[in-house]
Length: 258
Image 1 (cartoon, rainbow, N blue to C red):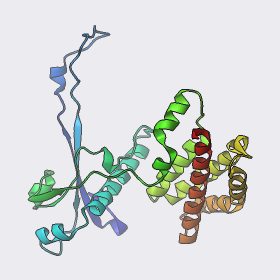
Image 2: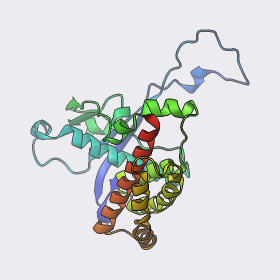
Image 3: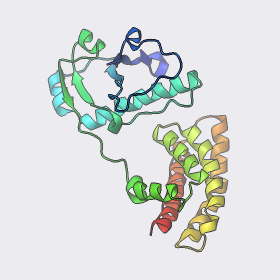
């Protein structure tokens, strides 16, 4: 049971592992064993997550399903699932736990059903949601395959500020604005320092100067985040500066891919 404001039930999450081999069938493996030249693919374990609204629908299920924006409903459910994964990451102190995205799922369904059905991860009627498209314009502009080839071929480097910016973006997209503010402060400082070698090319000098102008406001927002939540104007500023850094990094990348 997932509870929201004032402890009110919000959702029920049902998790089930599918397709896993029984451990007793795997045999005992002690030490290294010879591998056959052409091994069969290893069986892959999958998991099914079913998110159920705690409150019943206010209209017949068939009508709701016909009128619902399925992609929006699916993305909302994934946001809730990611909040659970984030809580697990913190509770288990396991930095390897990562959020999921709709594009990674084997199948995504939105449906309706009775209590016993949905409790078992099933439904009376469901519709499969189309695979998600590539997210946003950031990936398409960066031309990731070309960039990866450049990095692996030692023709480009990975900047620390790029990873810090991605962490800030992940927090912002998840609505964790305090964490995003903390990450943004260090990402901004790292970007200003690390973009300097490309100064004088394209419009990077102007972009770096614009980033410097954000130091004071970003620092103040981060200090406020130390004491509690952020207000809407501060959240908007975090998003705006984050987009500024992302744009500067795209500009730097494009210089290297010309």
